[in-house]
Amino acid sequence: MAMTERIRILLVKRGNISEAELARRLGISPQNLNNKMKRDNFSDKELRDIAAALGCDYKNAFVIAETGEEV
Image (cartoon, rainbow, N blue to C red; front, side, top):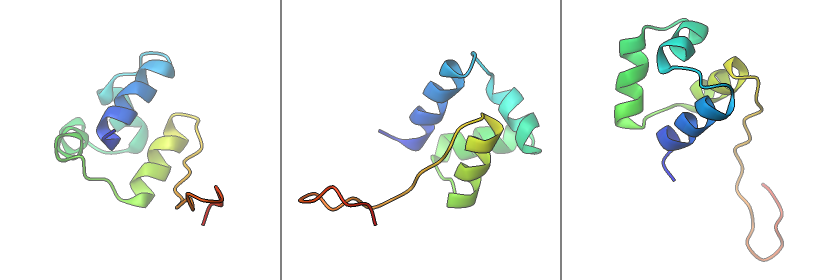
C-alpha cells in the first residue's frame, strides 16, 4: 500500500482530519502537502512529523521473514 493511501486512512481514523488541517499542523502550505501526496514522496523525517501531528507513532523497520526480528 502506498504511503499516501496510508496517510489518508490515518486522517479518517484520527477524526476525519482534512489534508489542509494536516498541512496547517505541519506548518506547510496545503499545496506543498498536496504535491507530496500526489508524488507519494515523503522523507523519514516528514513521516515522523506527520505521525506526531496526528498523535501517532511512526515505526520504520526491516523485518527478517524467518524470525520476525525487526532491524
